[in-house]
Image 1: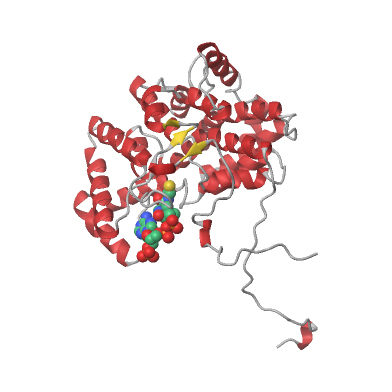
Image 2 (image 1 turned 120 degrees about the horizontal axis):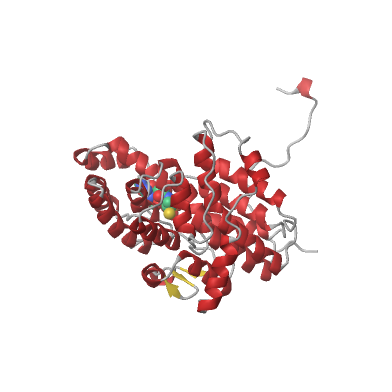
Length: 381
Ligand code: COA
């Protein structure tokens, strides 16, 4: 049988511009981010995270009773089983990044789910509900456990955003405006076409492995500083710069040293990430309210300087950093927050992949040696 045709010239490091699958989950066409045809501006202004999850999974907005029922299904799954919490307490937290801990915790979650290996649509929807409902509970449990405290139990009559802030702060009721802003952040991070972690989800799904395995792959991909890990790096960078006066020089030095300025640049958006525009406004207001407007001012100076020097603009991770910082969220929890939201998109991508599957199996262009001959170890030079 003849070898399958390889498209010469198609080699593109990082698969830039390569269309790897069809999708109807979210689109970034014409620099507009939309979920199932609804722009994120519309959803951020009017929707809730729970409603957005329903939209991503069902390709339509829920009717009022459907939304109520969906929220109840989620709330029924917020809690972690006591036996699971006991095991979570045994995972080391010292010198462990929260994303690494979360990756392990989600992998362990599968062992408490009798349907873990069932790839039917119905079972995957039930698993999706568990994953969305528990992701925030897990991240908050990590924060409690690493501080030697007991994880706070979620409240079933409250939203995912409310509960996350409540549990993370050790059972202190969050401010209503913070809950609203956090819910908006969850909406803005929910999905983003074929980003690195969505692709990782789909690659693992395409072998017909189970949903938990796909999500563990996705968490691993999101953790990296070129993807979701950038939001944490932005705040570390701002703190390292320290004062507004030093910001411009920092950017210029980074560029001449060919170092990346975190939270800036994007593979697809060359004229600005629409999420960054929304988060910039929130950052402006929140930092001012907190009496720490200098973080926003420093950010805008870096943003302007990067544009002038390199023509690059901020991505979603740039202004979300100061938004979370203003709400007193620990810096290394920023990327786990991304996972608390993006789990909704990952599940939608997995479901879409299962429904129209072909295993991902690209080719590599061979650049290694050929015709090597084995010789005994004693005679090797
Ligand atoms: N700081 C400095 N220079 C940057 C940059 C950044 N944040 N992002 C891109 N560039 C430069 C590259 O060095 C390259 O310059 P050159 O042409 O002079 O060599 C050029 O812009 C193209 O960048 P490239 O790395 O090829 O883009 P990409 O499409 O492969 O990568 C990102 C996209 C997002 C990974 C990249 O912009 C980046 O690393 N940003 C910082 C990390 C980040 O914020 N990630 C979150 C993404 S949502």
